[in-house]
Image (cartoon, rainbow, N blue to C red; front, side, top):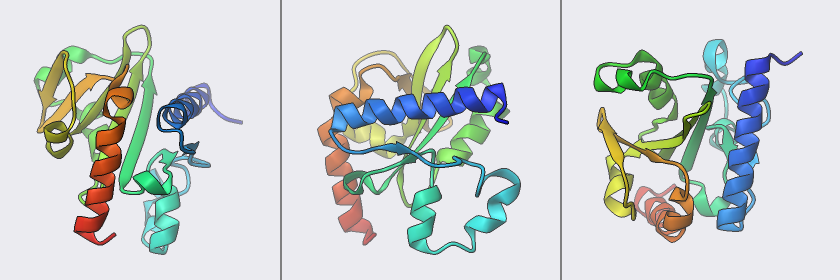
Length: 170
């Protein structure tokens, strides 16, 4: 039986996948058993997978080919101490470490009950996107409001993923 927290996380992953499918007019899916097969204590499994198999289990959202160089991690929490972003914050650091991959464009999308949804990403993305609004720089990452982010940056992200694919031979 799925725990209440896991069910909440699964629901948020489905919401993100559905939202991205609408925005990009491509098929995004929640990764089956997201995190369970290769995450946490099962990380050893990841090293035994082929490159094609790794793509299936990489992140929480199964990406379409057009954005195959993008990894998305999703988190949904009841509460988050935002003041912790002004010092070292072990929780968000662990989320970023989970999302961050050197060979991919990555996003961490997190939802906090009654506070909103936010998206974190690295400097490479920040330099390319169109964003006007409040943001925070945290440990060389940028955190912005999730609402409207993908709608405003759809074409930029498609182009980035395409260029990234060419430049990295992936």
